[in-house]
Length: 502
Image 1 (cartoon, rainbow, N blue to C red):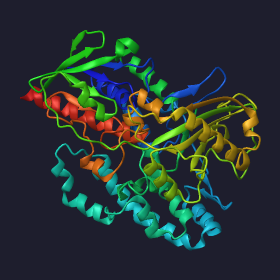
Image 2: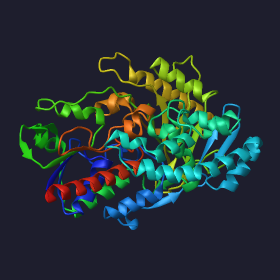
Image 3: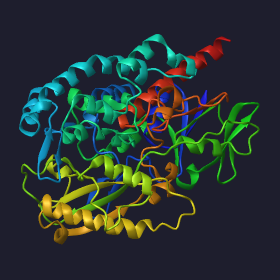
């Protein structure tokens, strides 16, 4: 049995490792010069910082799958973020999130005393729902959509009041808008707006408190290097750059036969796994004698990202944590405005929400001694239209300058004068690398794109064709993508055993 994997992102690499450890011959193709996909660094000669994911959630899931893939705990280091992060509100108030229930309750006492009791009720209610949801949704696939509508699933969805979105769930517990924001904006981690992501995704804010949030020493993108070293240990063939550029998946009689590369060469394989943003898969089948049902997808939210190197270091203090969110006057109105206008906030608009990742707070090696490296994320509109005349570069530069001025005033005094390296990344940059319409997280976690309604790892009636990644069930987030790879490989091994038997 020989398998080709198109795309060396996280899902592709983990799938390759798990297959290789089952004795399967695997060849991985990646058109970029490096593996890792969204797990990447932005860097110059002096500074380096994560380009994409920065927060490690569900650490036990990540660790267990890594071990299954042949990666030992001593090949990477997870450090707990304590506190998890801090919110800064326009009225000058702050809210610090702690994973410890008692400490979080005490924090709420100082910010919104009436929400202390509801928080404890929230944790009590969500614990059994999360445990059951993990089993029924994160650890199961829905190749046949009808399997989603089991009695147990429907009972769980009723408990979650699935007709509600994540923000509405938070509103049903908490009264203070600041606390509501603090227990609903986590859908942005997977590219969904709190008001359009179904209540199922309430699992994310709950999981933060239940299991904490973590930092990967050296940056999350260093995990891609760990995975690549493991791929070579397992003798996975890897083709990168021009040699890894795939033009087409070859199909005959509704069965995969192999790949055609951009150089015109053809290579036979028994199975092909596609690890890219799922909406692009159908285009890889063009020219083949196969019909697939086309579907319109909603892309995930986009981001403008600014990467900063500063020749100054700020002392730790109450106002600075590894992760922090600066909130607008109304998060809901700000996100709705961005989504509706399909453009970045203009100078006359109020400042949007933004997030700052400051790894120097937890990792002394994140920047040269006495210096600082920062990552700033600003929610941005999508989609990126192919023929749009919108000037992403100009508008993003102006927006980043406004955000830096605000961060200078509130959090990092003297920041603007200390900047010696700055790089800005827009949704247009993501689109040029194959991110669906510039969305930073694949397709959005809407109700019509979740669970059974999200693409599955065997998406079409084509024997030998599979898909994995953030746009495929169970969804986005590093541990969840790894879980999707594990479910796919387990399915493949069982399927191949049946083929041999028959």
